[in-house]
Image (cartoon, rainbow, N blue to C red; front, top):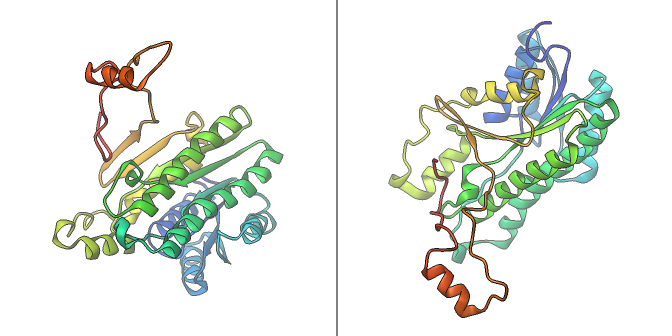
Length: 285
């Protein structure tokens, strides 16, 4: 089979529908053998059958990525079924909206467990398998909400953690042949429906024209050898726009004082010596 991922074996988590299913379909169309993970067996099976019906190779794997042992079994299943794991798309995630006064602690924990621990667990198992062969690509999924979005404390925090995890792993793995990048996608999915239902008219229709399939080519590119120069980067897809998200930076040269006091700190801010204040939300520079 030909394609940008010909001969590769890839795991896509949360691939039973939406963005994950779009990633799995295109990865298979580009030549990869794909393990379709989801907590819903019927959804995973349907995507696998669709891929096989189009002439591709795929296998289902049902289980929660937030379980350390199950995440390891997912990676092992890819190796046993297809001979290796060359790529991992850490797409599985859940989404909850709540203002701070309304936040349910159990829901907050659930978001972090799936979005952060699920990403970390699958990534750690995949990294260990990939390092044995000296090659592989991990694509994490973050979100612009980590820069600040109303009612997204849990979700935004989880995606900020994924971004930081991407930077740290990329630093750890520099020069090993194993790459780690992330995407910040945007599409009309069940998540968008929940967001619009929660915010009402203020959010209606913002993602209507943004199909999950529009995000898949960038993910496949990051899995492919063609993107070998990219490591520790976040690629943003928003409809017809492809762009990069900057890493956190220290602004300006800062103020200096050999013995800071509270009045000295206040004076430095008043004089504008510390640096500009950052607006909330994802900004364009």
